[in-house]
Amino acid sequence: MNQNLALKLTASAERHGPCPALKLDDTVLTYAELDAASARVAEMLRARGINPGDRVGIMLPNVPQFAIAYYGVLRAGGVVVPMNVLLKQREVAFYLGDSQARLVFAWHEFAGEAALGASEAGAEVIVVSPGEFQDVPTDGAPPAAVVERAGDGTAVILYTSGTTGTPKGAELTHAGLARNVDVLLAGNMFGLAAQDVVFGALPLFHAFGQACSLNATVSAGACLAMLPRFDAAKALGLLESERVTVFEGVPTMYSALLNHPARERADVSALRLCVSGGAALPVEVLYGFEAAFDCKVLEGYGMSETSPVIAFNHSDRERKAGSVGTPIAGVEIRLVDEARTDVAPGHSGEIAVRGHNVMKGYWERPDATAEAIDPDGWFYTGDIGRVDADGYYFIVDRKKDMIIRGGYNVYPREIEEVLYEHPAVADAAVVGIPHPALGEEVAAAVALNPDADVTTDELRDFVKRQVAAYKYPRELWLVDELPKGPTGKVLKRQIAVPAPTAS
Image 1: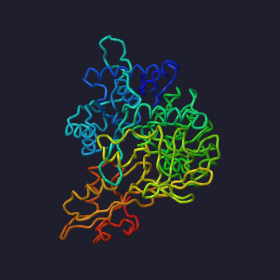
Image 2: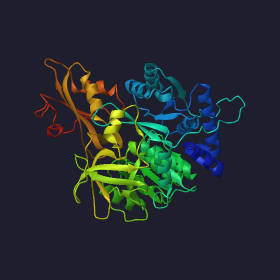
Image 3: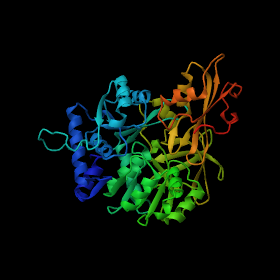
Image 4: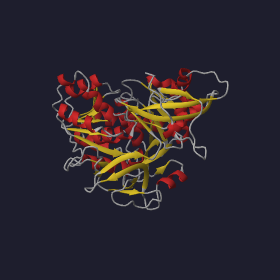
């Protein structure tokens, strides 16, 4: 039985062919057009020697071409490797090299870094511009059929990382992604239907945007109103002009909309549901947004490794502010201690998850997979949570040393590795510090080698040139030495953070 995730699109094209699937400014793509365009991309990939199971990178912003390429790769039987358009050469080279991707679709505005990284990794680059793919030439043969793929076959490799620094590719399966979408479409969750218009500013290369925005919208036959880069004023205009019914965003988006001066003038009366994820939504923002926009906000919890949704505040149950809700259908949650045994009731513990949403494993990382997923199928998230008497879960801390900046994950070890490459740096520690709008800001404390002569601005620019814009430390200061424990491990919680100075 063919369980290729691309069948979600072909099914919607059959039911809703002339209906709009994607909108971006004046561009409208119907389901029939999206399906046909993805078929042409699949034919193009086949002609270039892409075989079922081959990895293909997609380094595109939220534009129709992302969806066309995404379903085109899947349709051809390939494996999608989503990539942030802000990645620099070294990062592109790693993603493509580690996944052994044969090819990468790169947006024209960011093709320079993509080309350099792809050349280093030995991958081909297809530069994509607005309007691309609709006129891909064919040889007159029937449109490419959806290649048969097993449910446990890898559909997407999403790169993520913990404290080890080296990103790991989470292998998400066709069946796991499809089941996650089916659960989201249920009436007690998003309840998406063909008449819905979904706000599409969540990055589609990210698990949240890919599953909850793109795949869920396409599966429902609804319309995704796309916004390549979030801007509060443009977002308010889009909510009004497209009569958006479902808003999906990260906490920083909610805060920006709530505090924008044009908010009171925007007609957002079509909104029926708002969904928040990616980081904890401050309770005061949640209540303030609901009052201002007259729309209920449901908060949830997920990870790249879990396709991504784990728990949610269901629409047919009590919503508890500050909670990520209860497990979605087919998913179990446990709280465990360091020995991975269940904690006593009322105590906090590491969140362990089991169900259809759990990844197949980390791409070519059997040791990391065995460490994360036990023989009984429990995935250990590294997040610390608690559960109340009603079964509602609350995230209280992160075991993994990760910074969430404006909904984007930043892994300190990766940034520290770049700092250590500077000849003046003897020691470095990257930490997250509170930020009123972004949730957390990336900061770095640096100890220099004796007689080193370098400024903090020079160090900041050194990192900025080598990593995506959201990763480099806006706050960076020099110290004589970093606090360390008996084993020499840096004690990050003891690092004194000076008052913010960088913009």
